[in-house]
Length: 296
Ligand SMILES: O=P(O)(O)O[C@H]1O[C@H](CO)[C@@H](O)[C@H]1O
Ligand SMILES: Nc1nc2[nH]cnc2c(=O)[nH]1
Image (cartoon, rainbow, N blue to C red; front, side, top):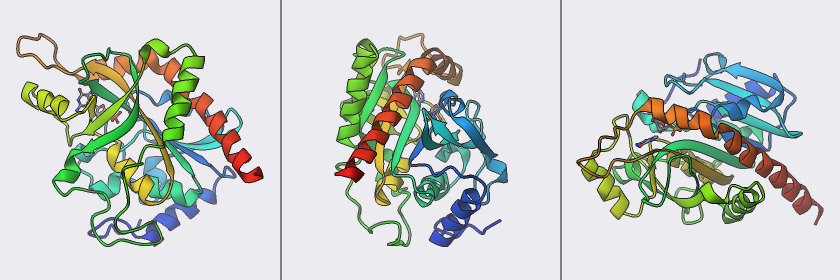
């Protein structure tokens, strides 16, 4: 419906999409959620849903990956207004990095203040097990090292500054809240924290690549999230992100294990319930915190 400029969408394009959505729902979301591979069940938890297929939303790309339904769902999670991407976009689908992060700017223009992202990732940290939930405390943005950053191109100050700080990208209070909620829910044994590394994909890592990433300080590796985080922080939203460790990355040449998307989706199914409870409990606490900060 709108032309994609060389460097992505303009502020006005994003605003047109946000206004189109706002005209069709009374929900005014304060929290925006992005569901990772096989983790779309979170969106199904929303009550009083108003849902849009991506193909019907002006400017939106289409989901092409199994495990990403391709729906934007508005509704309430435990009474709190939310919007949820049931399916995200990845560089390897052939979209530009500006296009895969476009929904995050639309979140901002919908009124979202906090973004919560989930992903499926391979475990590099040798203490991690399949099924662990890793609270992301930092990232290594490998496509960014090669110049593929979602903020490349002209900067529109209405979104944010030219050179945004990323040393505080992952909100520390929300990380602590996740730890506390996880302990309350009895998840202590499988709740971890660590550094997420994004690669372009879609091929999984070689043994040499995995060993290198581990040495560089990455605890988990995937093909998403960091570009979305950069865009969210650029436009001033708070960010919380977690990885479900869906597979153990192969680090030895004599291993019989082979990374595959079916295992990723299967692990997602097995941990879905706990992950959904963690995120939905956090949403209620974030909301209370916002209400409190308005009162004082
Ligand atoms: O990051 P999400 O979308 O959870 O998906 C992860 O799972 C897929 C590989 O199985 C890749 O797309 C990887 O990024
Ligand atoms: N790159 C990468 N992405 C993943 N997503 C889920 N598991 C993996 C993995 O092992 N490697």
